[in-house]
Image (tube, rainbow, N blue to C red; front, side, top):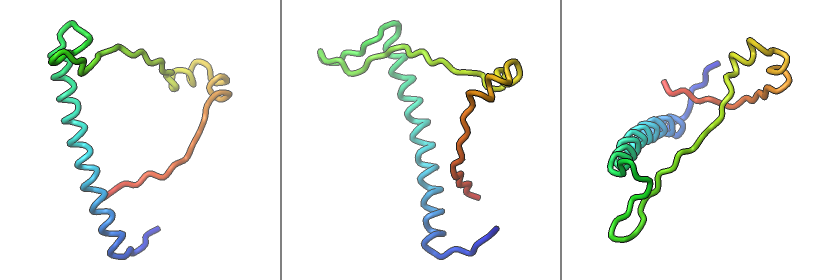
Length: 93
């Protein structure tokens, strides 16, 4: 289903595309800077500059569930515990 939109909506789409691109670039910059800090720490966990702690590195463990494997091996458990949600996804073309 299509709709011809007004200028304000078309401009919002254009601005959204620009923001998404800026976010992507910032995330890449964040990864690079984070990697530099971790490399600078070496085997240490705390960065100190001029006597002040400025960064701390810690390991965080996250537990995930392989839903495809769970569904294959234990379909009843999968069905009993699954949660579904629906949310809008906006694709810019």
